Structure formats: structure tokens, C-alpha cells
Image 1 (cartoon, rainbow, N blue to C red):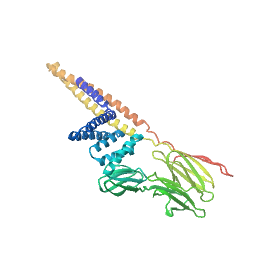
Image 2: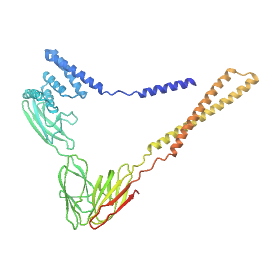
Image 3: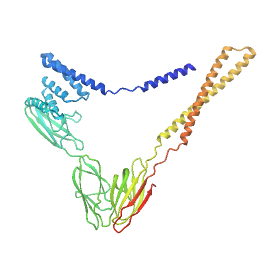
Image 4: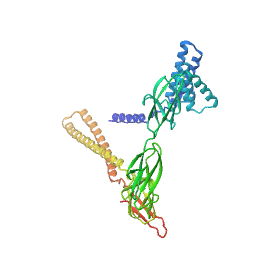
Length: 458
């Protein structure tokens, strides 16, 4: 029994020690590896520049492998890119050298001297390669050649040396649709490619709490629904019965965030206005219709009785009835309480309950075994007194009885402790949802008074 407990305790300590070990961050080791590769490449490049024949090619190839290894480790510095371009040039791979020299000039902040040296090398190679001079509107698009799954060759504007012939260029930029362009290049000539990128549409929701007919750039649209709108300048017009139309100019940015536009200015004579401030990003509804989104929402409303409802993910909903007078501006302050989280508590209850049940079963079985051993002990002891029974058998049963009794005591203790914890978790209140309120304070209007009230969650 003692040996088993000692083995279990030692194994537990060993497992805890192994779990405590955490792998060291590879950042320092990776940086050191990149530095060593760069120095190795410099050594091979210097040796290759001095050598001739097969040895020259071998040394330059070793330098190329080392510099490419540095780039694979993410250490893309101006010296690495320049030395890589120089190595490719010395190996006679001039198109690749041209492209790396171009990246060197395009990507890094260089001194006037370094920029001049890089430009001289580009100009020296240019007559011997086929070049595409690539631009896009807007600039900054990634360029791939041939297929979308191939690596990016650079960002616009750039010059790219390609094998002579026809190629398909693929342009990608966040917020814009991918586009393609065909180019034919010839050695000693620079072919110009200019791509016009089209922005991705943005979801725009137009809100007109007072009703009316909505026109977007002259086309009728429905209020309260999201509409895909192309980037650029637009005009939305709200036509109201017996009132002047309401117009609003707005601009959509390519790939921008969804927009909510409320046509609030003007409106029928006597239109009221509601200004809501909230403690979270909310969705606001007036009489069941969406009127805005965010922590600050403003919207118009016709005079009369209305219900304002405010919702937010992970928070309780607040709702408040308000009565608006003509030309009145009402300020609302919504405080939304957080919903109670009960998942962890319920899981704890379940786990402790299962452990307590298993402990109870184990303790019951062990106790039954102890009673059985006690019966054997009593019977053997009686025979010992009457006929002189087996003393060794009596000692064995005594040891087993002691071990079973100790195990039963331990299991009963564990069961009692875990059972108590389970009972406590059952008693503990997981907490209730936080209350939400809307405070309403009307701003004074000419010839009128103010109103103040508080609405509770329901």
C-alpha cells in the first residue's frame, strides 16, 4: 500500500514538472540563424567574385541559397535584397536580378548614394531584358503573373522583368475587385500597363422613421434594408407627402464598413428629434423599425406616442415609451446591463457531482471489501483459538484488512469533500442578468416645458 502511494505521488510530481516546462520563444534563435546565413552568403559572394570557372559558379550558388534562406526566415532588409540581386546578376540571371534591384529601389528608404548605385545597375541591365512598367489606380495593388495562387511579384507602381512574350497580370487590393490585364513584352523594350481598379460595394441602410418614398440616385429603394452601393458620390432623396423633399449627399469608400443613413434634416413641420447615448454599440428601434446603430444615434420622429427599444449583443434589452411634442428634441441615455454567464458554474456542478458519485461508489465497494475481510478474520481467529489455525494466513488477512480500511477512509473523506463542494455549487446563485434602463430628458422648446422620467427593462 505504501509502495503504491509512493509511486503515485512520484509520478504526479514528475507529470507536474513536465507540464510546467514551456517551449522557449524561437524569435532569438531565428534572428541568429538569419544573421549567420547572411554572413555565410557574404563569404560565398566575396569568394565567387574572386574565383573563376566552376568554382565561381559554385560559390555564387552557395551565396544565393544563403540569401534566399534569410528571406525565408523573414529577415527582408535592404542589404539582403541588394546582395541577392548582385548574386543573381553575377550568375547571369539578369531578369531576376533586375526585379530584385527594382524591389531594392521601391521598398526601402535609401541614401542618395545607395539609390544612385541601385539605379545604375537597373539601367545597365534594362537593354538586355523585357520589362513591363506597371501602374494601377489607385496605387498599391499587389501584382501576380499568370495565376492567383502564385506569389506576389510586387506592388504598383513597379517595373517587372518577364520572359519575352504575352503575360496575364492579376491586380489585387483590399476594398477593390480583382482585375486582370494582358501585356506583351520584348527584350530591350518597356511595355506600359495601367489597370483601373473597381471598388467593392458597401452595404448601406437608409432609415426614414417618418415614412415616405426613398430614391437613391433616382432609383426607388426600400427603407430599412441594406443595399449594396458602389464606391463614389451618391444622392439619396426622401419624398414626403405635403412636405418639401429631403436630400442628402454622401460618399462611399471602397470596401468600407457598412453605413446607416437617417434622413433627418427638415421633414414635415413639427417633426420631433431623438438623441440617444448608450454604454455599448447598440441597435436602436423606433416602434419596431430600425433607426440607427452605435453608441450615439440621432433620428427624427413624428409627434405622438412611440416605443424606443435598444439592443446589444451580450446585454439585456431596454425599452421605453415616450410621448413627443411637435418640434421637441428628446435626449435618451440607455444603460444596458450585461447578461449573466452561467456556463462555467453549471459545468462545475456537473463535474463535482460526477466525482462525488464515483467516490461514493468506490468508498462503498472498498467498505464492503473491508467487512468481508473482517468476517474472514473473525472466522480464522476462532479456528486459531479452537484448533491452532494458520498464523501466516491470519497475518495476511490482517494486512489486507488494514489496507482496505485505510482506502475506505480516504475515499469516504474525498467523497465527503467533493460532495460538500457540489452542494455549495448547487446553493450558489449563478447571478441574474444586469438591469437595463433608459433615462429620458426632454430639452426645452420655445413656449414649452421639459419632461424627465426613467424607463426600466421589461
